[in-house]
Length: 516
Image (tube, rainbow, N blue to C red):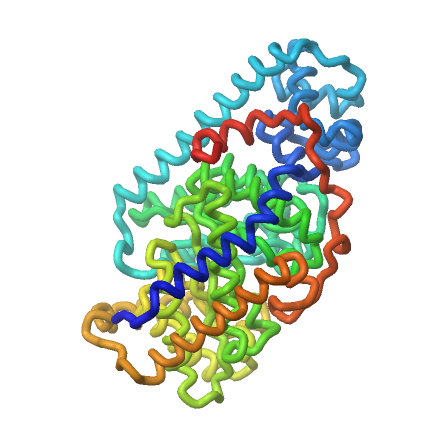
């Protein structure tokens, strides 16, 4: 079941996306951020917190705030050399009050040699994770031709999340996403250690990642499948969370070039620079990203503005490719969000889903369930989720985030998740080969709608290209939300790199990802 689409128009859209992202990419290459510097310190081994709860990477950046544009890794390595310590011992020294700024720099050759050792340690760990993941997926060979069933847990308590995640995995889910606590994206630090409190979700910490990873590996062995773990590399600590995800072998991370700008009012310059570094880490650690275009339809009408979703997918794809990501790791997002009262809405949803699938055949697309029009009517909600599952399977989406009966009412109960999984499994099994049995009518509603959306997307990308991406965001072209260039959270944390800027981890990843 394929659409007849004009491939010249698709090539034109990709060329426009390249033009749109080029000046942004030039800015990215010239800048770092305070969060990238903290992330790079974590790659060196900087971890832990002071007695007042301040993470050691934050303590270091506060001490060396005037040196961040040079790259803070060199100062951490300098201390390792002069104090003859390993990272754990140096972290304890900093916790006790030692300041890296108190030491003059040794010869750069010594710093470079030590940096190479730290990079080798990091590379060995990540390569081990990648090999383990590939081997397990190859060993179990689960759901090779079916969508991966993605469910969320969000109790606020990581130990309770583990219980719910285990239950979901046993029932049949392939992917567990731990929703982050509300407002964590606005914190300019990462909490330390396991957490048992959180509003609307559980804090993303390295300790929590480790606890959930071990739990899913354990249940996966019993169920003979590899359970994928997801969290959110977004917000003011996007690069640090990307580091933690890589170190603890997460498999997917939400990573969008504009979500934080539009929906969390994080400064656009900060976000674009942070997402580039973060996505390099994702590519290096073979982590699938999930972009967030589905969120546009929570503020915009899905029928009228679906072309903005497709346009953003082209832009997100280009940014990801600029970060060294292969297409099989770029999970572009979209959603089933048309007003259910619209006549032939199902046909339009199918047109949209099939259009994205045909344009991005190599991408593990992530399809999001209805949320905007969910009400307290759980029976109607169940039907809407069933239609979503039907379109998802029929149009060969790779990742299905399952809708819950009580969406928008409260955190789902275990039985809500059970019914969601059973619904998806029933539909996927019963229409298993339907895609091969159908053709799309040449001049029918689905085909015409797909061509209309593609034409609108090209016109929209032309407008963004003429304005520039920064100006387009200021004017509210995406999700009908306006953000000022120099406003928003985190702008002061964007720094122009000095001529002697040094970041050996960035250099290494660029080399391995063929970005030099």
